[in-house]
Image (cartoon, rainbow, N blue to C red; front, side):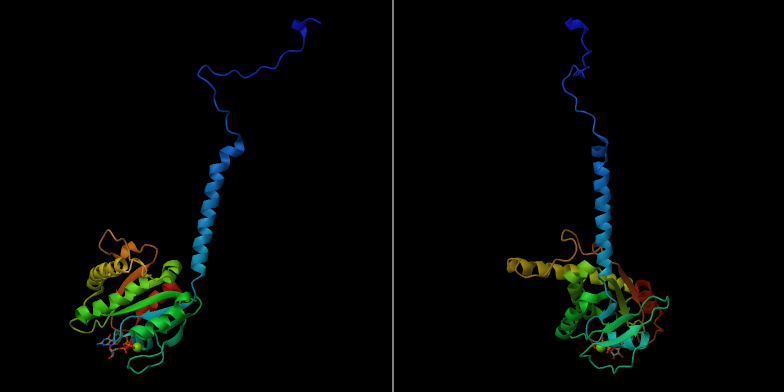
Length: 255
Ligand SMILES: Nc1nc2c(ncn2[C@@H]2O[C@H](COP(=O)(O)OP(=O)(O)OP(=O)(O)O)[C@@H](O)[C@H]2O)c(=O)[nH]1
Ligand SMILES: [Mg+2]
């Protein structure tokens, strides 16, 4: 047989003059980045959803002794009237939001350090919201004591993972020497910056064995905006003299 007459040879793709060109991606490979992006978005949404879902219905009222937590609890939130003596156990009430959302369980924790820490530890896993009451008429002492409480709250791993909403209430506005919530915010930020320096010095001296976390961005003065994952709001009023709208509105908003 004549070799020239045989079946036509298949055309082999010719290599370009510059060398090998990678073959064009198959359609399934081209879609891979899109699929990975979708999976990542889905996992992020699941994470955010479960993190929110982990929050319970408890709202904890914290703050130093004598800040006015129990007055706020009984007068503004309609809780049972509790004698204004230093609290030793939490007071508790069920708050029904005006917007029809399920009830919240509001707990007024005693201000005494050790007692508050004990009840805080028991209640923090289900925390949905935290009201920190500051005595806005007590000058530097009021700020220092409230900053101590806030440092503990804002560096707590349970708070950082469940991200409850926080309301900082500058109380006793009926007193002539009281400071408004903007001034209180500013002073708390300064005090928390100082406190952070003390805590990081302690951490260094203990070789990092102390489990305390450092608050916010260490390269900058502390600012509440640095805790961007938590919604922190400020308000002012008088637990003794007000009707309590501000606190009720906040509870409704987080319910
Ligand atoms: N002028 C004024 N006094 C207030 C106000 N709120 C609370 N007080 C007073 O502050 C004192 C302490 O109030 P409490 O509500 O018992 O304080 P607390 O934060 O519960 O204190 P502990 O239970 O010790 O942690 C009481 O004498 C209250 O009458 C307020 O808005 N204005
Ligand atoms: Mg009390």
